[in-house]
Length: 241
Image (tube, rainbow, N blue to C red; front, side, top):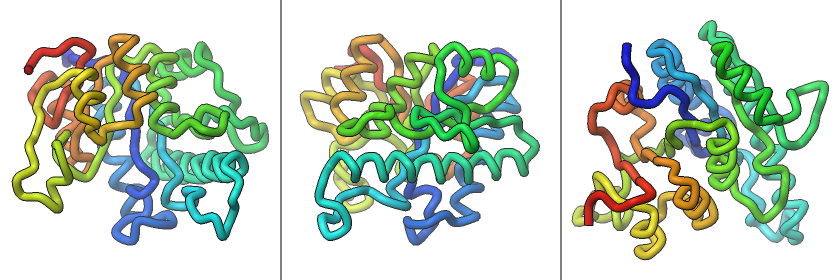
C-alpha cells in the first residue's frame, strides 16, 4: 500500500495511559496507545513514539519539590516508566519494540542515538523515546519535535482526546472554531494550545509537518497515513488563511 507518510513520530500525553482517572498506568490506557501504533505498523509505516510523564509526576506541586531542575528530572524518569509500560503492551501484541532514553540507564533502556534509532526503525522496530531531551526546562513536546527531526520523520503526530486544533477547548465551548489546515506562524500568533512554543518553532524552522488528531479512534491513523483528510494539519507555510 502506498503511504503518504513512511516514517512517523507519535506524541502522546502521559494522561492517556492513566485511563479515565488520568493518573497511574491503566491497562485500558495502554491499549488506547497501542492501537494506532499497531495500525501504523500493519500499514508498513515506521513508528517512533514519545510519551509524557504527567500521569505519574508533573513537578508542579511545591510541597513535593520546589526546585525546577530536580522536578524536571523526576518528570523525565516518569517518562521512562511509561515507556517501559508501553513497550510491554506492544510486545504483548507481538510488535518488535525497543526503548531508547536520553537519560542513560543501561540495565533498563538503550541510550539514545539518532543513527541507531533510524537503523532500528528501518528494521521494523517501534522505537519508544524516553527521558525527554535529557535536560531540564524542556517539555516532552519539545523532545517529540527534536526526536522527529533526528529520526528524519515525515510527520509529527500529536495525539489528543479531541478531533484536532480549535481556538479554545471544544469540550467546554460549543462555539469553538476548528482549524483543518493552518501554519506554524498562525499557531504562534494566536497562541493556540497545540504544543509549547519551542516545539512549534522547531517544526516551523525545519519545515516539519504536524498532524493533530483524536487518539481514541485508531482508524484516524489509517486515514492520515493513506492520505485522507483527518484532524488538523499544521505546515510550515500557510495553505489556508
